[in-house]
Image 1 (cartoon, one colour):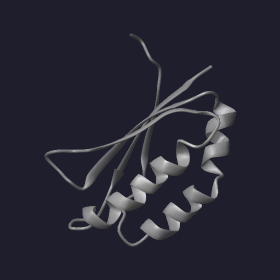
Image 2 (cartoon, helix red, strand yellow):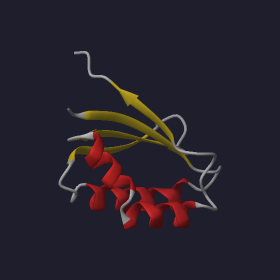
Image 3 (cartoon, one colour):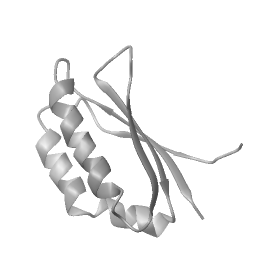
Image 4 (tube, helix red, strand yellow):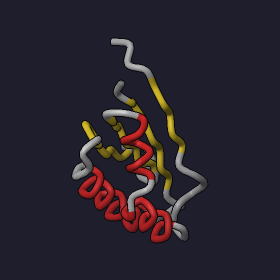
Length: 96
């Protein structure tokens, strides 16, 4: 069963230029994972500090494996000083 996620990452005010390449590296690495079906990154037009991922994973096990990858740990460490709050994750159900 596919897992559909929307994840929202906010950078601290003025830190979007530093956050963007960290997130783009997540895209590169995550798309290499076998369970990754979609991993797209967007940036809000109105608030450049807001980044949104649209993700589809092959299974919950695949998503769990994703969260245990070194690139996720590296992002957490590298973004610690520029992230605003915590990443908001919405686990959704595709209805149409």
